[in-house]
Amino acid sequence: MAEASAERRPGQCLALGLVALGAIVAFSPSLANGFVYDDHWTIEGNRALLLPLRTLLRGLLGGNGVRLGIPDATRPAMGVSLWIDRRLFGLHPEGHHLHSLVSYAVCSVVATLALFSLSRRRSTALIGGLLFAVMPLHTEVVAAVNYREDLIAATSVFAVLSYVFWPRRGKPFVDHAVLVAAFLLWGLAGKESAIVVVPLLAVLLLGSRKGRARARSHLGALGFLGAAVGIFAAFRTFLALSGGDDVPVSLSPRGVGERLSRTAGYLDWASYRTFLPIRVTPDHPARGVPSAAHFVVLGVVVAVVVLLARRRRTRTVAAGVAIALVAPLATSPLVSPINEFADRYLFVGTLGAALTYGALASEALDLVPARARPALLIGLLPLVLACRDASRAFRSDRSLFEYAARQEPTSARAFAGLARALRLEGDLPGAERAADHAVELDPHFLRARVVRVYNRLARGDVVGARAEIAVIEQLGGARQYGLARARRCAALSPAEAVGCSRDRVPETPADR
Image (cartoon, rainbow, N blue to C red):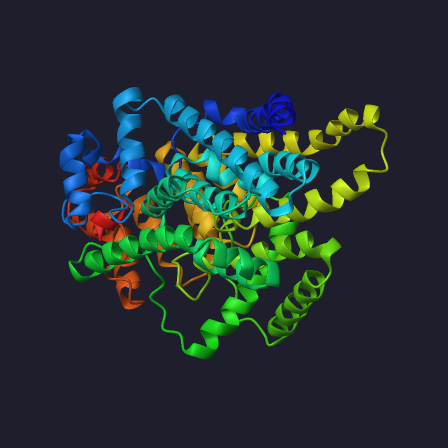
């Protein structure tokens, strides 16, 4: 048995290496990207990255991150990751992107291990792992440095799934459980969405008799994982009580009914996008309150999962659909994220799509002669090309928001972002057209009006800027991001206002 295992090991390493190579080839154009969107204030404008690591960690872990102006103060693992980049690469974006690309390749490998643990089939794991590595939907997580936090969180979730469901005889080793629990804690410190590992384990372990038996045999290991979750919960409670929690949430009041209906609509949307991970959308327009039909669709999907789980042959497919359905809960309207829809919210859930497609393709692969199977890799080429094309869209703010505006022509946020990018490049006429169009699409979208204020200031039109500021305040946006600085600029002379408006990062929490 040991000799047979040793013989298979080179093949397994080769398969994992192929997955990593696919991830790197698919998203290698991101190495030529600059800093975009949130990268400006979390990296370029983040003075905390110049602090000694001990001082940075003391601020993050001691609940003083917000008071010290540290971006993402609730995510110390992400802060450490960016601190390392700043020490190694300075403000040269190619080094930061290389770190993200390597992290994605590692994440794809761990995802492949999770697929094997869940399916117990090497062909399912390899096919699913390759599909996961070249999903265009992952572009945002790989190509924008600030969203490396999603990579940190997802890798820890996949590692836990790999460990808990790994085929083994007897009880798992305690030292391994401690290591995986520590890794989970690191993932939770990267981004709180890693907490979705709790409902995922609950569904996958308690959803079948075999899973419940595995849970009983893994009580010790699950105890260590539970301890990691408990430590994280205590840390976040401490941050909340000390005023150190800066995670932006939606401030719009919602009752229980609306929150549940929005969640049902969100899960339907997430399932659809997860199983068709081809289209890349850097921005998503706001949607109205979903109808009751979303509950019907959600109920049908859940019923299908239950039916598939009852048959041994379709159990892996059921697990894949369940993962795709449960994973988005951590970013759903239940927790009121400030952006209700985003591609990166679906990253963990795409493991479910990879598992489902891998299982189905593995069954079909049995009908293909062994010699012809390597040629099937050509079928991944369109996905690789789509990944490379989408990665180039993140090269600059202008290219990113031009791409977003093409993908979602009704999104006011996309045109507001484009207006700001054009202004910073000196194209004031284009910036004004884009900002005006954003306001036309949504007159109550205050960020677009703030951008229009800066456009006025860039022309030295302080009178027009003051008038726009008055409108924003009338609409209830007195504390809108970037408005405090805009007021200071509008109080200056026209010539001084032009210079004051040349700020690359006016819209950050520090500028409320």
